[in-house]
Length: 58
Image 1 (cartoon, rainbow, N blue to C red):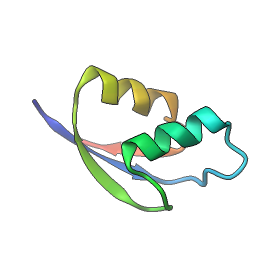
Image 2 (cartoon, rainbow, N blue to C red; image 1 turned 45 degrees about the vertical axis):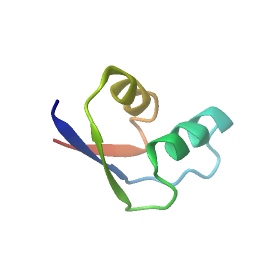
Image 3 (cartoon, one colour; image 1 turned 90 degrees about the vertical axis):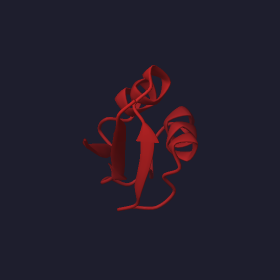
Image 4 (cartoon, one colour; image 1 turned 180 degrees about the vertical axis):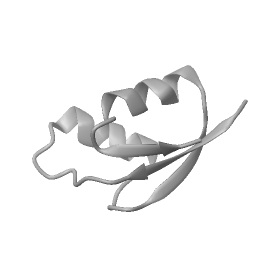
């Protein structure tokens, strides 16, 4: 599978708890952090849920 890089570009302050939990599950705990994951349907669904907080680098 292809890997994608995910970078947190906006703050998690004032976000709902489920979005904070999704960021934690992706491994994003601070601003401007970059993590690398396999492009599985579950990871892509998590990215879609917090698409306003992250940017995806293919």
